[in-house]
Amino acid sequence: MNINIKETNLSFGSLSRRSTTTRIILHHAEASSCDASVIHNWHKANGWAGIGYHFVVRKNGLIERGRPEWAVGTHASGSNSNSLGVCFEGAYMKETMPAAQKNAGKDLVAYLKRKYGITKVQRHSDVCATSCPGINFPFSEIAGASVSGTVTVSSAGQSAGQNSSSSWISRLQSECNRQGFSRQAVDGIAGRNTLAGCPMLSPGASGGITKLLQEKLISLGYSCGSSGADGILGQDTQRAVKAYQKDHGLAADGIVGPATWKKLLDL
Image (cartoon, rainbow, N blue to C red; front, side, top):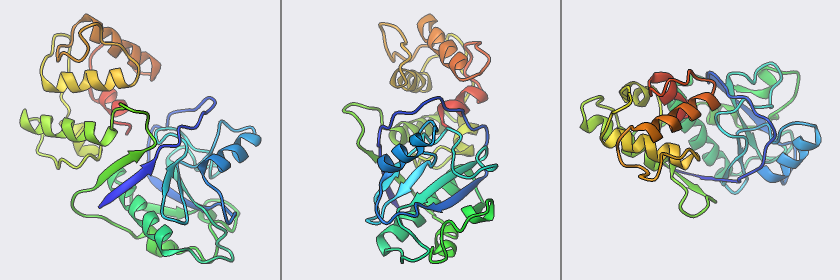
């Protein structure tokens, strides 16, 4: 299965990191025509940091990224802390969902369920007093979607040279398998098996996994020194690790253990 997600590169105010992800909540926009940028402006007008949904599924089947996937959303009062919010363009109290949109929504939900180990998918109306996502919304079909085999996720709208997250994850999975730390599927999807297969990296560590760590840090704006991604966890890389840990509320010890890998994998 191939999923293409359009990177919208929206600008947000202050966001909080979600500590756990246990469910998906589905919405409709209650508007016949809109995209992520339009919803972003609506929600900013409410005084929010930006669009409250993590994804927007358009009628033509395009999937757009909204709020960063790691962030707490603003889409279902009282239920944001552990959920991902997916909004579907349209007003499904009256309209009928096009096949392209329904199929894209099924693929996205199946991918997210697998990525996070989610079994619970809810309507907005299941958690709040609202008619959303509408009586014509094909909830059972979309919520019940599942996937087997390889999932390829690609992103459109990235700036030139930007590191592809799914490619980096695939290479990390492959290297962890090659070094004997795991026997996981190389599918580009970061999940519990990927996290379990990542070894602890201490100062002085070297090799392919250390190089992948450096690539990720550099792509996130943390310099690993003049040598760049040289595969050695030296002083410059240790400083980059500590800075990343401090910025993400972790113990800044320069050791890349499960908690740091979890943040790097956006879990």
